[in-house]
Image (cartoon, rainbow, N blue to C red):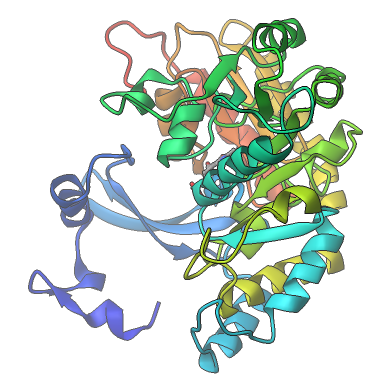
Length: 447
Ligand code: PLP
């Protein structure tokens, strides 16, 4: 890249001349250790195709530049890949004339974006935020407000603590509300007491949910789940599970809320995953990630009018939620998704990629337990005597960035626009990576 920042001297050296070791050392000593990135590699930018990344990599005797396939799309945030000419050209033009203003004054993109959001999501009203976590925090507030006014068996409001039911192994983000929704002990470590009123049930277990409704007779305000558990390892519920959950919610006057932050915006071969299961419109959904083509963090709580109408001035707000750039890229993304028919492409490419990965998996029946996925959200589950992090490192060695989730799943979710050639590369990298994957003998290295 050719910006003034490449020549900006930091620690006495232009950034473009930093070695990989220097990058890693800064991350290790100055960045809180919230991720465990691959050492020995630095991404320089997009590659020669939208689904490629240009990287610098340590070799035995120095560093080399090469291109690899992006098999992760920033956890599904980059549907069109990197350096998309239409996205970059229009964002550049927009930024050149942009003003940054707060929501207390109108601008010319928010209104049109809300109208397009309504058409695209089929929901009634929107509360734009930046990160996915923030959208989920706003959803918790919406649920609590609704519960006070309209919850309970008589619809006159829940007087005690409104209960929100979530799923074991769910992932909803890093805010304290999202953390209270999740039961991963590492996520909750040292943070208790967390916000009260959250209970978990096993994902895809309707009976367990029915028991909760009986136990809490009238005090359940909502069931809040991912339509496909992505972070947990791409777990797909049975065909009728979500529609049965929705019916149970309706029968008990509780809200049915879906976290579509990863599954929305065409990732599963549908505009939204709730359409994949033929559901009625959910009461609330949260969206994020791909809604800005990966250019900047944009998210939203989306919901039915009677719930969203409970928000009022000063009760909620956001400096960057719905600001001009967010609204502009939000509109631009929907424009491009529609124009390029990305939903169909996701279904088509997803079928091809899953088939290719399944063909490879068949060669390693003792290593691969299952390949599962919908659209371009695919997981390869390996047996517990093999290590997912090792598999993702092998993939990188073989030219593909695809990251493990938990210990035994490899998430494969490339940019939706990936070409056949790119998908074939992912399949052949998986083949080589499984071939060299050794059984765990000592400590697991997964992060
Ligand atoms: N919900 C789901 C289902 C997610 O996958 C994620 C992120 O991976 C989030 C919420 C949190 O989004 P963010 O990281 O933008 O806060």
